[in-house]
Image (cartoon, rainbow, N blue to C red):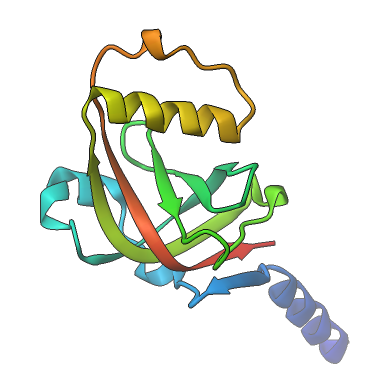
Length: 152
């Protein structure tokens, strides 16, 4: 009976570990920094390597070259961008937990750049876009990732 209990406990313990799929150089969930901590002073993190984690809520439908992760920061999302073709995030990654590691960047856009950026995002997601709806420039913070892991 003791052996059977030990086997059952071992099976349950092993099944609680999610398998992970590594992309690029990978990333480690234990090294992830909360976005709320990064966004307290984002300028201090620009150009530095960070690891972030969250649930994937969106994936680039065109090339799989970016994902958006949930964040603990004011209901915002963290954009994780990779070099086109080097890492391809599968569309079925939506809803899965992920961690990504890379350089924290600031995209400080003027109004025209903002319109082009939003138009590009809409095009990738096959959504309509009205440039006249954009009235102000935007700043986007993102992780230029060299690696990520996605839990199955």
